[in-house]
Length: 213
Image (tube, rainbow, N blue to C red; front, side, top):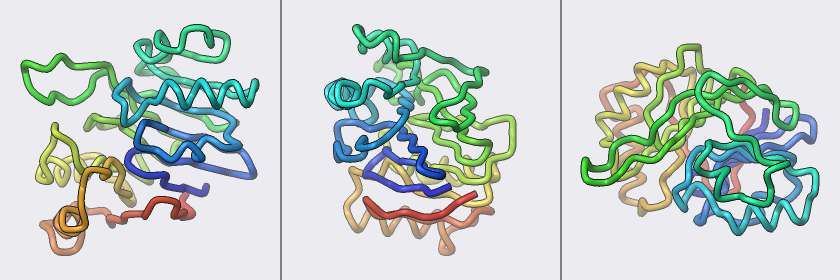
């Protein structure tokens, strides 16, 4: 499986020409959707979901399919035949990948800010994208996409999260708001200079790819 990061929270996975993209939001280069067969969206926040980009991609490719939660599916009215609303516990096939759904809610930002729904996706039993939640799947995870910076977590929480998930490796996502200093600080604490997570930590630059699985 080839994993490519497209900035902030968006990644693409590819096997044998089959392409699946997760969370192409408003901070994502629209070219991330070029030539893809299916899209997964974890939740409705703009940095994970761009209605404009998805509608444009769907118009360009009548075969494109989208899987997401109910709230996002409602925003894509008119595309109902190509949008599937899914929830925790469901399993489906997208672009030939087996996808299992975990989690229900976005992490709490503040008690005064209403929570939105958020689902995580385990792809081919190998790669887990939790969206904006620290969801712990009840199955083994080989590669964890770790949301390293948001208004709802601390680096200490992330260390404990990686320890609990116990993946073979972790790759950074959700880092679009960090400057170079922040990237180095977070990477140090999650990497060899930190207290230890039990899993190697890596960060891909936008457009960079790696083979996993």
